[in-house]
Amino acid sequence: MDARLDLTASPTVARSVKYFAAASRVIIEDPALPTATRNLVMLRASQINGCGFCTDVHSKDAVVAGESPVRLALVAAGRETTVFTDAGRAALELTEQGTRIADSADGVSDEAWEKAAVHYDEHRLAALVTLISLINAATRMGRIARRAVYDGRRPGRARRTGQGGTPRHPGRSTSDQARCRRHPRASRTSAGRATPNAPRRSRPAAAAR
Image (cartoon, rainbow, N blue to C red; front, side, top):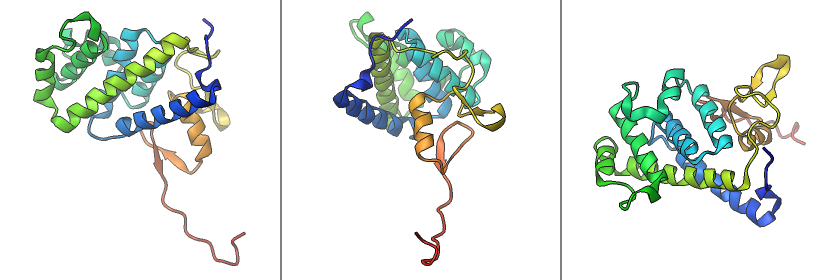
């Protein structure tokens, strides 16, 4: 399947996408929601919207963060399984109703909201609602422009490799990898996110050039 459009070819849209990505990172990096919850929410919305690119990225992000194959396989049937906590099932139900918002006259039911409110305080609920909204916007851009999925690589393989063929930042999107190349001093955590190394010591004035 060929991409219909490179959205970033337009300077104006490229700037807009940059700000959109920055807003997304604020929520994604906020510790208000557990990493597993964030990854599964983004994966479930991507599945419902049928965005292959986003489903590919977020399933790999979940694997890198330590998500189990069983939970990944059952995320679409989360309410019918016991592999998720009550809080996880509530987040997935809110995601499903928030993504299929046109399927119900009420949009998101009071029941789904109340289930989520049992497990998440107002700050976490706000983060969850914003995350659901942002991933839906991202998947719609992907579907409409028909963004390519694998770019010739096999599913489950990192796009780039380091020395000796070891994967470099597996599961991360192209923009994330590019950001890592622009900031080589960033290290990776077990969840695949960048954290700054210790600050460099200032060099003696005679050595500075």
